[in-house]
Image (tube, rainbow over all chains, first blue to last red; front, top):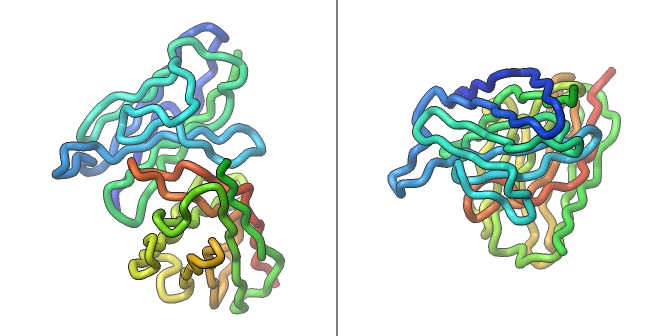
Length: 112
Length: 118
């Protein structure tokens, strides 16, 4: 199984400031089709997870452009250009290359 | 718009069975794979199972393989998760999620809670 490692696990951020979350996979998520099968989700408090980014860098429908994903192979990053209060919650990366799909432990973003 | 609604959770003793249902609407159900993802209380997300759009391909996480089965009825837009030989560690909130063509899961239900306890 692919192991997904996120850092940091806790991320206090001042509103308006940028934030960055790292995700590393134990093996490359680059498929032979040239795409990286890495997705990012946000689970807001008391809510179901929501898709933010898929294929490492494609924003899902309705996701604000302050969210961006980058990386390839085994190293990926989620960036929030200017954090807003509504961004609090736990962010998860997940590999979608092979089953069993595996998630990182999550990064809890909180507002300072 | 897309809706995914799970049901069937409850409290069950170890070793017993439970069947979860997931009703979907707002998209062409027969063209998408469907997944189950669970979350133990206070813990992170764990992918559990997937069924292909035509129901012919099924995959499971090792911890449930052989105990859980997944099926779908494309005429009714329903996915089922049949859980047998339940264990205490199967306790959690079970989400049904629609597969996204570009990988990942783009729509999730609100979850149904399964509690395995004697």
